[in-house]
Length: 134
Image 1: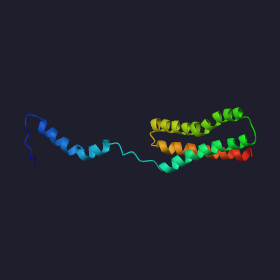
Image 2 (image 1 turned 135 degrees about the vertical axis):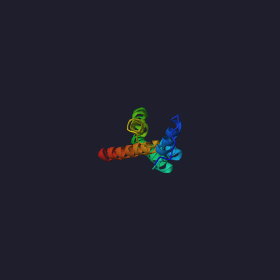
Image 3 (image 1 turned 90 degrees about the vertical axis):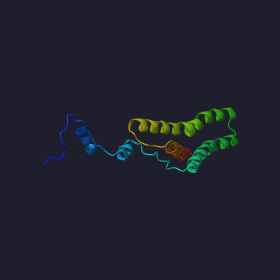
Protein backbone atom coordinates (compact mmCIF):
# COMPACT_ATOMS: atom_id res chain seq x y z
CA UNK A 1 0.00 0.00 0.00
CA UNK A 2 1.53 3.27 -1.16
CA UNK A 3 0.86 6.26 1.09
CA UNK A 4 2.61 8.79 -1.11
CA UNK A 5 0.73 10.27 -4.00
CA UNK A 6 2.66 10.53 -7.24
CA UNK A 7 3.11 14.11 -8.35
CA UNK A 8 4.05 15.63 -11.66
CA UNK A 9 7.48 16.81 -10.44
CA UNK A 10 10.12 14.56 -8.97
CA UNK A 11 11.48 17.17 -6.55
CA UNK A 12 9.73 15.94 -3.38
CA UNK A 13 10.89 12.39 -4.00
CA UNK A 14 14.47 13.57 -4.58
CA UNK A 15 14.36 15.71 -1.45
CA UNK A 16 13.06 12.75 0.52
CA UNK A 17 15.88 10.55 -0.75
CA UNK A 18 18.47 13.23 0.00
CA UNK A 19 17.40 13.57 3.61
CA UNK A 20 17.45 9.85 4.25
CA UNK A 21 20.81 9.17 2.58
CA UNK A 22 22.80 12.27 3.50
CA UNK A 23 25.12 12.64 6.44
CA UNK A 24 24.02 14.99 9.19
CA UNK A 25 25.62 18.45 8.92
CA UNK A 26 27.35 18.04 12.28
CA UNK A 27 28.99 14.79 11.18
CA UNK A 28 29.98 16.31 7.84
CA UNK A 29 31.64 19.28 9.55
CA UNK A 30 33.53 17.09 12.00
CA UNK A 31 34.85 14.87 9.21
CA UNK A 32 36.15 17.81 7.18
CA UNK A 33 37.81 19.54 10.13
CA UNK A 34 41.54 19.18 10.49
CA UNK A 35 42.45 17.63 13.82
CA UNK A 36 43.95 20.13 16.26
CA UNK A 37 47.71 20.37 16.05
CA UNK A 38 49.36 18.52 18.89
CA UNK A 39 51.93 20.30 20.97
CA UNK A 40 55.56 19.39 21.21
CA UNK A 41 56.55 16.39 23.29
CA UNK A 42 59.75 18.09 24.39
CA UNK A 43 59.33 20.81 27.01
CA UNK A 44 60.67 24.21 26.01
CA UNK A 45 63.13 24.23 28.92
CA UNK A 46 64.62 20.92 27.82
CA UNK A 47 65.10 22.14 24.26
CA UNK A 48 66.76 25.35 25.46
CA UNK A 49 68.91 23.38 27.91
CA UNK A 50 70.11 21.06 25.13
CA UNK A 51 70.96 24.06 22.94
CA UNK A 52 72.94 25.72 25.73
CA UNK A 53 74.67 22.44 26.58
CA UNK A 54 75.65 22.02 22.93
CA UNK A 55 77.18 25.50 22.88
CA UNK A 56 79.04 25.00 26.17
CA UNK A 57 80.24 21.56 25.15
CA UNK A 58 81.46 22.74 21.75
CA UNK A 59 83.35 25.67 23.28
CA UNK A 60 84.78 23.85 26.30
CA UNK A 61 87.82 22.34 24.63
CA UNK A 62 89.02 25.62 23.17
CA UNK A 63 89.71 27.18 26.57
CA UNK A 64 92.01 24.28 27.41
CA UNK A 65 93.77 24.59 24.07
CA UNK A 66 94.39 28.28 24.71
CA UNK A 67 95.67 27.52 28.23
CA UNK A 68 98.11 25.01 26.77
CA UNK A 69 99.59 27.74 24.58
CA UNK A 70 98.18 27.11 21.13
CA UNK A 71 97.94 30.03 18.72
CA UNK A 72 94.75 32.06 19.15
CA UNK A 73 94.22 32.32 15.37
CA UNK A 74 94.39 28.55 14.92
CA UNK A 75 91.98 27.94 17.78
CA UNK A 76 89.51 30.54 16.50
CA UNK A 77 89.59 29.18 12.93
CA UNK A 78 88.92 25.68 14.23
CA UNK A 79 86.12 26.94 16.49
CA UNK A 80 84.57 28.91 13.62
CA UNK A 81 84.07 25.64 11.74
CA UNK A 82 83.29 23.15 14.51
CA UNK A 83 80.93 25.14 16.75
CA UNK A 84 78.40 26.09 14.02
CA UNK A 85 78.54 22.57 12.61
CA UNK A 86 77.44 21.02 15.89
CA UNK A 87 75.25 23.80 17.29
CA UNK A 88 73.48 24.85 14.08
CA UNK A 89 74.23 22.29 11.34
CA UNK A 90 73.11 19.02 12.92
CA UNK A 91 69.86 20.43 14.38
CA UNK A 92 69.18 22.14 11.05
CA UNK A 93 69.36 18.79 9.22
CA UNK A 94 66.94 17.25 11.70
CA UNK A 95 64.58 20.21 11.28
CA UNK A 96 64.74 20.01 7.47
CA UNK A 97 64.10 16.27 7.66
CA UNK A 98 61.04 16.86 9.80
CA UNK A 99 59.71 19.44 7.31
CA UNK A 100 60.16 16.96 4.45
CA UNK A 101 58.44 14.17 6.37
CA UNK A 102 55.61 16.49 7.38
CA UNK A 103 55.05 17.55 3.79
CA UNK A 104 55.41 14.28 1.90
CA UNK A 105 54.51 11.62 4.47
CA UNK A 106 51.84 13.66 6.28
CA UNK A 107 53.53 13.25 9.64
CA UNK A 108 53.14 15.75 12.44
CA UNK A 109 56.67 16.27 13.76
CA UNK A 110 56.88 19.43 15.82
CA UNK A 111 59.77 21.80 15.17
CA UNK A 112 60.86 21.74 18.80
CA UNK A 113 61.02 17.94 18.78
CA UNK A 114 63.23 17.92 15.69
CA UNK A 115 65.56 20.62 17.01
CA UNK A 116 65.84 18.97 20.43
CA UNK A 117 66.72 15.65 18.79
CA UNK A 118 69.32 17.46 16.67
CA UNK A 119 70.92 19.10 19.71
CA UNK A 120 70.87 15.82 21.61
CA UNK A 121 72.59 14.08 18.69
CA UNK A 122 75.13 16.91 18.48
CA UNK A 123 75.93 16.63 22.21
CA UNK A 124 76.32 12.85 22.04
CA UNK A 125 78.53 13.20 18.96
CA UNK A 126 80.77 15.77 20.66
CA UNK A 127 81.07 13.64 23.80
CA UNK A 128 81.93 10.63 21.63
CA UNK A 129 84.60 12.61 19.79
CA UNK A 130 86.00 13.99 23.04
CA UNK A 131 86.19 10.49 24.48
CA UNK A 132 87.88 9.13 21.36
CA UNK A 133 90.57 11.82 21.17
CA UNK A 134 91.28 12.30 24.87
